[in-house]
Length: 168
Image (cartoon, rainbow, N blue to C red):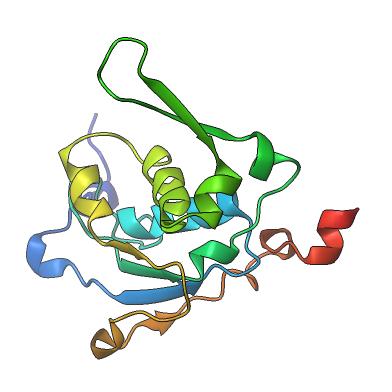
């Protein structure tokens, strides 16, 4: 059976390194729900928001997240969500809550861990995660790259959580 001429011309697009256009975006995490923020960041880092997405190429954007200390969590996750690590010694399991991490010295680690766990494992993911920069405060040293602001709060009303929502 002979295929039509239309299907003969259809080819699957696979991006080459010259086709990749990486942008810089800055996201303000103040008042944004952690899981929703992490899924948007993971999608941007992988490049899945682009029509030319190619799974085996690093074609995602460089993402800057500011105000990581102000990220919100629904329910009792701030007190109940537990992060575990192991020292490598017998009986050396350590745990801490998300609230302690956010109030501690490195609040950006909560967002970094959430994004890392939403991406597939492997060498390409590790390279894509190097394009993520998270800062606890409102300042970042990447003004020279002229990052475009990405308003995550305006994408969906469920993305934000105000102090009035927490008391309900």
